[in-house]
Length: 552
Image (tube, rainbow, N blue to C red; front, side, top):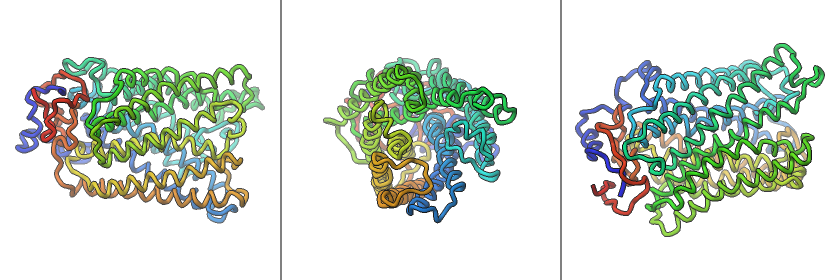
């Protein structure tokens, strides 16, 4: 059984006869896109922006890895190296990972999955995208105005003293925060007020639970970062003495403020990825999700506990032993709801009719990579081992296994899962699997050696290093180019398929949540008649697998 939809054949009818134009062809022209109120077009503009910045941020990473092929700097001088790795981190965190799934795919699919015509506040949604573009412009400005060399965390006192474009970059991040808050507010109200008739909270797709939990964090945590960055700008401009020790300030206070936002922000980045995996793992294994309520509520639990663990970033900063011990304990506690999800996903796969499509390849990659990221986090959450591993390449590897091995892998999987619905075109499945394999192998080749380097004491962010680490750095750099090739291949064939690909059916994966009941691509207002939800989003038991339609 599935969601029942009044006039359930409407998608195919309109797709065939063209009585309703789809969102890609309605009102053509650049201005019609820049000032559209259609959530799908806004989401698509976010998506294009995120992919462009993913390539830019990835290019910086490849240049950094090329520099680290040899122990002595022979490609970049130290100052340029610092600027490159800083801009890589800042672009990837603020312009790619945070908006990648919520702002782009969330915008496109949240109303479709709810059975709504649009988000609650379409004009605020458009304003969010325009604000995102303005914030991005400030980051691009730093490229031509001396760069940025503080690391993406903007740590004081260095960010107060450096001569690079700290104000432009922090102002960009400050502006991007407003985009994040407005998007979160919009999604919260939309989920509360615009669910289709019959769609209770426990009939919502798990992707929506993940977006809802993410939105709560965006609304509650982002103002803290905004205030922190504003204080840093005032400190640099006027020398007020908030973080400057010579003026009576406290540099460590910046770390408390920054991580109070940025650790919840880790879950802004990863929770939508969890939601995507829940969707893909059920559809591509043809099995109802195991532990629906546990997965749904664990998203909310992660959102709540995520506010209480920021101090584990500061075990070496001089905070009290009791505070460190408490933060360590709570850090282990946040692993519990995450483990609930992983075990539920594995249980869903068990006994399922697994189809090894490209989205499923990315799903399995996610399970492997994110689990490594989570388990290595235990070493960093433990006081004794963190002292040794702090600020080494072990932290770099852990961070990337969680953020890139989690969010970016989930994002790539989601792109392949929903690409036919977004564009109305199918991509080349063979190229998709080659790309997924390159990404998986390249990722492990890049970051697993960094665990070894870090455990042996190799500090992160260093421009030159001891010759004994060169072999590991060379392996890591080769892996980065394999990873880059995989991502670039995916961008190429997805772009080609959008222009020249084979026409996609309305429901290529035989999914049963509401987004698969619309035309492909969806019509401008999503549904001809109001859909009605009668069952859960993953109940495949009575689906006619030849057509993907439920028996009504």
